[in-house]
Structures are given as C-alpha cells and as structure tokens.
Image (cartoon, rainbow, N blue to C red; front, side):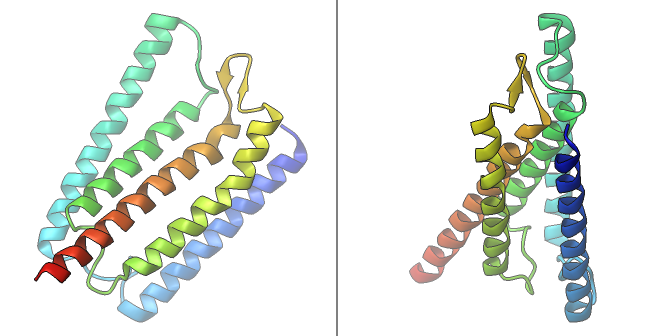
Length: 179
C-alpha cells in the first residue's frame, strides 16, 4: 500500500472519530446520555435479541468462511482480516435491520430524519472510493478480495440500513394515515 493511501485512511479514521465524539457530546448535552435518549424496557429487550441475532450471524459466517477457505478451497478468498471485518459489518447490519423492524432503533427523542441524513451522507461518501477502486481494478488482485473492497461493503451496508429506515418511516406514516 502506498503512503498516500495510508495517510488517507488515517485522516478518514481521525475525522470519523471526531464526528462521533461531536455527536456523543451533542447527545450528552441534549438528552443526558451519549446514545441520544433512553430506550424503554421493551426496546431494550428487543435490542438484546437483535444483538444476539447479529452476534450469531457473525459467528456462523466466520465459521462458514473458515470451512470454505481451509477445508474446501484450501486458498484464501480475501486478505487477512477482511473476512472478519465483513462478518462484523454483516452482524451490524443484522442488528440494525432487526432493531428497525421491531421498533427498537429509535428512542422517543430520536428523529428518523437525522438518521436518514446521516446514512445518506455515509453512503454517498463511499461512492467515490468505490468507483475509483473498481475502475483501477484493485478490488480483486490475484483472485483475492482486497481491503479496497471496504468502501463497497460499507456503502452496501449503509444503503441497506437507509432503505430499511425509509421503508419503516413510510410504513409508520401509512399506519398513522389509516387511523
């Protein structure tokens, strides 16, 4: 990897940490908690179940990847660590979907509009890097998926969660209109 690429990753991580810290600080001042509000007991129980589903998804995917790479193909499909990162992102996606579907994603203080803006911005920010990496042909090298696929994976994850949020908001509006 080139030095400029490593600097880009470092700057991206630093900016991300600063944004998260600012959001946590804002939430702490506004609601008294860093997560932006209190979940009721029902939501906490549902979030626990969603966490469990995400965890077991990561566990099963990791095991299936190990079986595929070590026992079946006997060659790597991805760079070291990338499979773990993808398993974690899929687990996060399962957690997010489960929470959204069971009304445990938003607290009373949270506004879906803020999440729609955040996930839209995150998805859009992944597009230039994804296009550049695909155009350069660096996503797959020697038949192995490289870390340069991360913007694609993150873009798909955030677009999927964004779509779920929008569908949930539209369904809630439809329910409210029918009442």
